[in-house]
Length: 231
Image 1 (cartoon, rainbow, N blue to C red):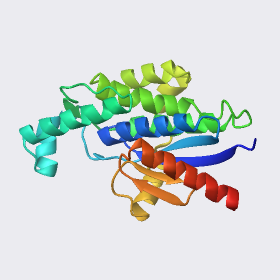
Image 2: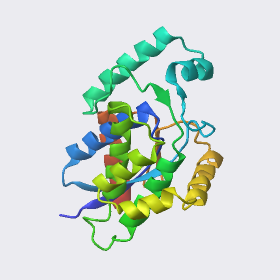
Image 3: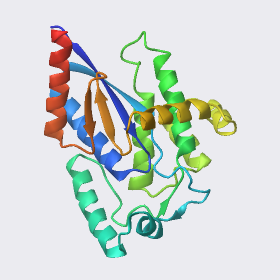
């Protein structure tokens, strides 16, 4: 049986709760397809809070200032997000994130992890995995455990846990490695008109915005595959 390849470019931020929910839904949609399709998920950077200083800011204060929402409204949104997350197998802390952080260094490590995956592309089973695993680990650390994604200690521990070379990760964090690449990707996305996340692009042709339901993602993956076969 011929296996059809579908590429998903997943544009997102580690600090975005809807990105965590959207990824959980995408993983469930992929699982439903079983062996019908081979889906490769590539993660691309998007910073929601690029100007956030070290140490971050209280989440309630920041969201009230940025979006004009009250503490009560934020609590209601957190409850809804926890419920949506649970539906797709993602665990959120009921009390929320606590603080909002800068995620630029996390994106630099994710970019590097993608390069490491690509370097073993000759082995299809190993061609993806570490970037995906690091993305999930970062989202879980922040939304599930309240750990700061700006912390180099946290980043190094997570990189090691998913099989990346910890000394190399430490060297990256201590340098400006991959900073230009991350900024270039973000500029390309901005020029393309992507101003919210998650944004998913299937086979460079189909665009989905927001945390879509599993059924919608499954149908979109099938449509992308059918188009690929027709082409």
